[in-house]
Length: 338
Image (cartoon, rainbow, N blue to C red; front, side):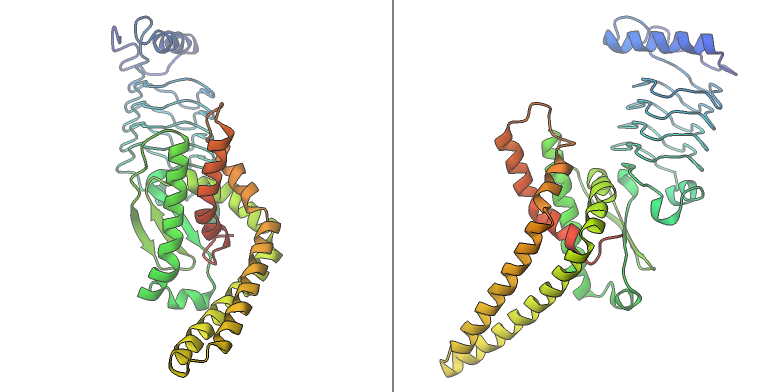
């Protein structure tokens, strides 16, 4: 239970001794389930350039706290109240902001690689403006789980960009790709034994490259950045060949469709059957290449990060099998950002 509720209150500069005492009391408060110690109240505290790396501040109050340049790498700020806090140029690498209140917080120039903002509320923060000033275009959120602004960058050639956002493109290419991202996120949600994420598309930006902002797909976004892109680079030649084969297969399937229509009139199915056999051979070659790229191993590598420690082997295998379809679509897509 929070006994006093104001253990720093309107404090100016937090002294190390006073801060350590507050952290110790907060640790005791957490460990006892609120029966002992006291919840950390660092409202308006001046913690500029303070080293809080690895600190457990779960549920702490840091309302309007002054934290520019603070070192919070690896800290746990889940369910903390950081409303209006100044985290400018702070090191937030690997920091846990799960369900944290970050409304009106300042994040200008903060380092957020590997940070987890899942389910946090950061209403009033312009992530593009705040973060991008200090991080390169393609690495703004590298490894960060930032659900409200998971920006999927679609690396496309100029020719492809010209024809993007047509109804056909949205239905045939972009729609399935984003659905696969959502499907993989839901599989991860199941593995983590939590409710399925309510995924929404917040914006589609038609520039070079094209960008799509989606909500609550942080885990999949992280997998794309940390695992799938690396896998694509390792198997670049095979994927290029697979792309060629898929185009051949698409053409062959159209030829089969035309011949089957003609055969329905002429009653001669021989040519259509021949083309169907050729299509199956092309498809078999595609499957061979997929086996060589070890997509199943990639699925296991991604999912094992989220699996409970004592997961049954059969259940893990089932999750891997479920993930293959969306993972294949994401990893093989021409929309993937390299």
